[in-house]
Image (tube, rainbow, N blue to C red; front, side, top):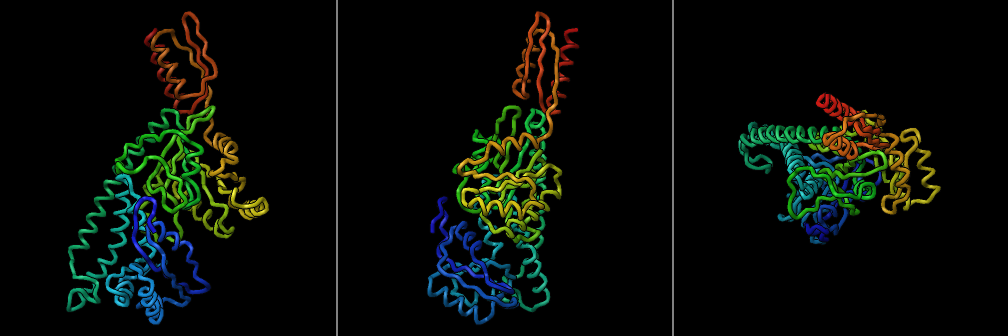
Length: 439
């Protein structure tokens, strides 16, 4: 299957082992498709983990047969495989067949979607963090064994571990530099009267579609280098990991200027090292004035509950901004199912907004809720001496505040408006300078 962006990784068999119950292959099937693989075969097993093959030895033989019969070039496990398990499975398969686990697949998708320098660095950081324990294992084993390349893990190279650690350190330093720039940009936006709203939630919940509906305007320049063949607007395709970096767009309301940022989607069952690698992507959420937690209402209620709990834990770690739960895709459920899920989630998500981003249903209610939840605006009245500088300040206030009245006399300009505290403070300072200069 060739994806819309042209990536075609060929035929693949997907596999999953679970300790109990039946293995659900839907997510790994979607992940494989998102990476550009054509799923030509599936294999599952319910048993405890085998230390040598992850699945049982007999099942490994069955997997090898399935690969040959389907012509698969890749085997993708919806599990985490150790280096020895990956090596042993590879020995059972035709020589050209590659074995991926869940996390190497996710990193592959991230690598395909990384369109900014920040995203590319985060992908590389995650890859290095994934590789580091394997390099450490090689170092440890090679020191104990007589022959380099013990168990086929590759030639022993003690310098590789040091190289990885050095590169991780350099990437962290560069990401910190980028984040300082991002923080300065957010401060400038706040000082200009913008309220910052962030969209959060799991992949495929519809965040990018909602962004387009709420803020169908030109993107705000993020000053980040993108590949020339990638669009700068948020995509809204029905596929996973569409948004790896952040996309910020301007949403105009009657009283406010609002910037809405679509962020990388949360993903279930991720190890700590992978989440940490992408923490800087979530800084747009952590520094927002309001977070919209977008939930796919078509998911089973227990899955929604688990995702909401995990999202709240992640968001409240570094953010005290209000969180509004947005139940998206109500066009795909009937009224009874929607009511049932709202009641089941009432303790976790009181007073959610139920919308359809695709059809535009209830978006006016959502805009009203955004205005209500954002920090209170302050009312201000300035009396300015007539002159060109006063007109310049009046123009600036019009651009950065909600002006209620302007009165002109022979000697004065009186302007009444409401704005964010930062804009009110700036306007007072500039008005003070005008009065002092006139005096």
